[in-house]
Length: 137
Image (cartoon, rainbow, N blue to C red):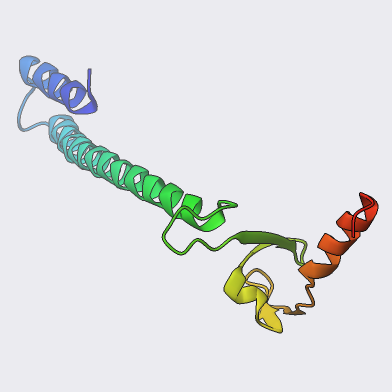
């Protein structure tokens, strides 16, 4: 039984008691039932509004998931073909995702803490070291 139905039942019980309409207690009781009826209506409206907001938040969450998959995936499936690299900020420890264009910058700002980070990345050395380790040159 919903809250509105319970208040309607209570109101029906009160009417069925054939209370003296002029008695102070009857007027008080009728006033309390009216207030309960208003509150039940308000709560019902709030429940409906909350359900609508929950649906909207679910849609936003799905959209955000789509955006996150585009932004944070290791490989971009979009038309740009850029690779994405993960770097840990030495100041705050959060993971920063960099693309090829950002690697060309000398300095970037951590989006989490605002710390300016100098980039000194040389991928050529890693390839040469790997070749040296395998006995190749």
